[in-house]
Length: 185
Image 1 (cartoon, rainbow, N blue to C red):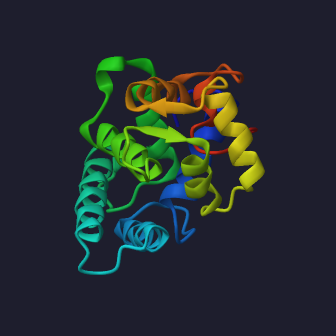
Image 2 (cartoon, rainbow, N blue to C red; image 1 turned 45 degrees about the vertical axis):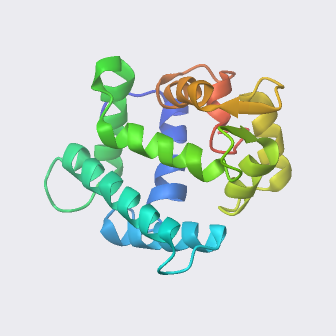
């Protein structure tokens, strides 16, 4: 596994286990993405046949294909914890190492959180998404305050900076650490 701080590893494993390894198998595979799609579509009330349901399927499977292509080092159709951490370590070390699927996933998450589709995320939109993943709503609201530095909204450009910070910073007080609804790792 790549040399990575314990703090960053905890953040990476949080995202791995909560948002990607949905079936808790210890690895990420296509089945996890199918389960995630169902969870997201149910959260937003997008039934099968709804345009947003199809859009979610298309986006998530493109994210899966990109992730698998870039992180599945042994080509077994699964992304292990080590492969996941190695990929994000490369991202942290080289700003030019940003992969298309990572940008697609970042934009997908922003759009999922921006339920009002007004180009910004507020605390209610933010907490709605992350509380659906089991994070206490109060913790989500506190995380939003820290992430937004007290502002009422976060726009896409601000979110992109926070995203990079989450995956690359070892600073435990960095606002980007809170983009996934948690206040402590």
